[in-house]
Length: 228
Image (cartoon, rainbow, N blue to C red; front, side, top):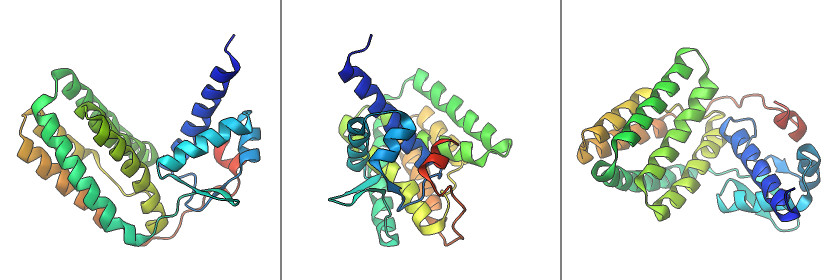
């Protein structure tokens, strides 16, 4: 039987991943209040586990922790857009250079399979699944590069990007399997310059998509979000 500490850690992970997925699936809008008691009831977890998950999400810049006011989904301003994408271009260019030198045949095969899955999602009209996979592609590339410090920075930026898109446009910016495929093939050829160029162009395409659109309808309660 799991010890109380182990049960609490598992519950914390469950809450953390559920909130992260809800943001990546754009089911939680920027500015949404995250009430400890309500989340504890929804997930059948202790308030301590919920508090731990919210603290971790705060470290990832996904949640804003406000003293005496509770936690809310971060609501970044449009002024953050150029800074965030500049940071992503710098870091992901470094990741491309590192991967082009060190990527393995197994990693190339995994990336190709991942992009194929992403393309199938878009082909069947499942835009939400495609967008989720598009976001996770960048995380996978970061993990494969094998630099723990850069990976931590990328985790923060990857979490922040969909929030910025939702706050500014009401939708997740379209990433696209075609761009990702070109990045993977450049890496397969160990062509660092081409990989950097493809990734830089890709990020520029995503940044350009951040144009004002109507905010989509989203569930109004946390219970509705996490019952989806």
